[in-house]
Amino acid sequence: MLTKENYSLFMLGCSHNSAPLHIRESFSILENTESALYNNLLLNKNILEVLVLNTCNRIEIYLVAHPGLNKEDIIDTYCHTQKLIKEDCLPYFSIIRDQQVIQHLFEVASGIDSQLIGETEILSQVKLGYQKAQKYGAIGKVLNRILQKSFQAAKWAHTHTGISKGQISIASIACDLALRIFGDLSSTRILIIGSGEIGEKTLHALKLRGAKDLTITNRTHEQACILAEQFSATAIPYPDFPQKINLFDIVICSTSAPNV
View 1 (tube, helix red, strand yellow):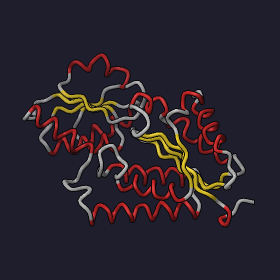
View 2 (cartoon, one colour):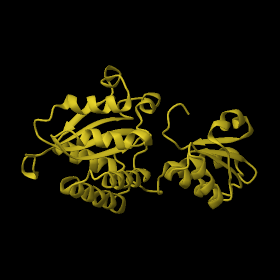
View 3 (cartoon, helix red, strand yellow):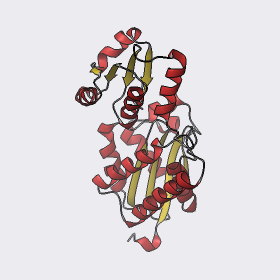
View 4 (cartoon, rainbow, N blue to C red):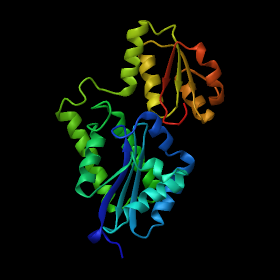
């Protein structure tokens, strides 16, 4: 019987450190397969707890499991659920365990392992992943404690070091770049693709910088409409945006959805 006295930690991961964007996009876990991935992993009697972290820059699966867990089982389950060919994934994924997993999660949550070192969105993304794992009943005492400690480590790093000097975020950097190029954003036509947390932060940052002509699109049109109403923007159906993209001066993509 697997108990807290005889577990090990595992992490199967692919990130910006190992794969280019188009590869990561093809590996991204979609909403309609996320619950199946959790279910299939937890069906393995050697796995006790699961956390899936899925962002535009990383796909990582954290596990509390029997020390003798066959590492092949993790990648096999992931590829089967995602309908991917295992041989296509192997060059880009790696597996670490135990102390390395804890150190890695602390570095991820703190923004140390981010493509943009010190960015702050990743901590919110880790917390969102934690909430989803709780919803699926996949978090136990071990991952809960490690995650709570990672949140504390991230807070300490951002408070006591210069890692986030200037309040680095991908949304703010994208908006500052747009402002630098166009000067005045008040009459600039801007399209934001994606209505998740980064899309929302991007809209907020653009409004603060004087942008008025804002349009948003999302795979779930209802979500785009909600965000558009919140920021006095316009929502357009996701299938329509490729034909209308030439109408915009700036296009900001804030989604990890493939083929965008």
